[in-house]
Image 1 (cartoon, rainbow, N blue to C red):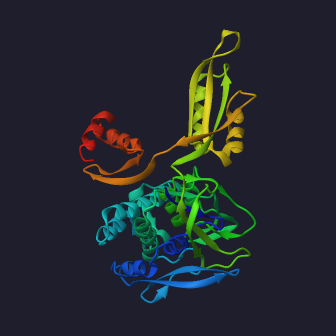
Image 2: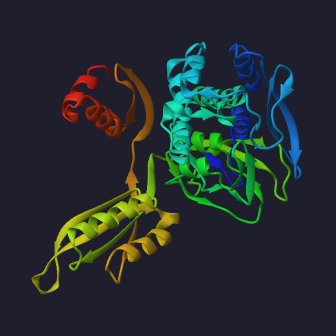
Length: 392
């Protein structure tokens, strides 16, 4: 299976991802020509070979009217205030394949949703700052187009190094990771460390969240090419993101299953525990009725999580349940390739989850979008689902 593994030991930003992935292409300059032919107003893509701590790699420059924005991982200046509707119109006018447009807009919607939650405003009222500027559109477009060209069967990533300290942005001085970045990375394994600075930006976080199907250790893979995407800041460690392109044996991964039996918790308490476990990053949390000692009916609580997250989720399981012992088991699983696209409807945009592999192709409309529309229209979820599935 054709696989890309991203080493985010120094975080992730749009320009670094684009540069690393560009090096995986057989003819990077042809992709640069395609990007420069998109007609983004005043935008010119350039690639520079630079060295960081003795390592040679690519650095992507996006010049707008001859000037390059920012001096760090991510461009920091604001090109006015841009709303999601403006971005949708701009992306819609590009001469690129429809699936690539869907990917670009899905990334921006992840950022919009995060900004909406952080600032307590509806998405239509969100005005982007660095992520809404022309240079960020250029970075996201580059990553989406390169991945479309590479067409991997799976994209995997290491846990994400986010840095520490503070970052200055349009809203003032904020802690690292910035609130929007932290919101986007919910459910993704992240860590800090001694390196001060913003290593993972909102754009980088959204790109990872959209494209990566699993975060964890690098799988056994036969590596064919390695791309190095260099950041623009200098740190004590080489500031680069590595992208490995190769083959893995099949589409399986390993998860950890935590389980415990309880017979002294109320239904409300168990429901609350499951909510907290899912919010803490569990892949799934569910219950199974069981028979226990002394013929007591009980409940088995099961949590599925990434292997590196098992200790942390076990602590959460102890915290929110009455159990005094937890079973732990690592299990291989078969998984389908997953992606998310958007569907335009008379009720607005809805997300569609697609999965395929092993001779199967499935698609499903996001439940939260169905529920939102059902509430707005005063109809049942079933009615709305039947209506919208006709458009798939």
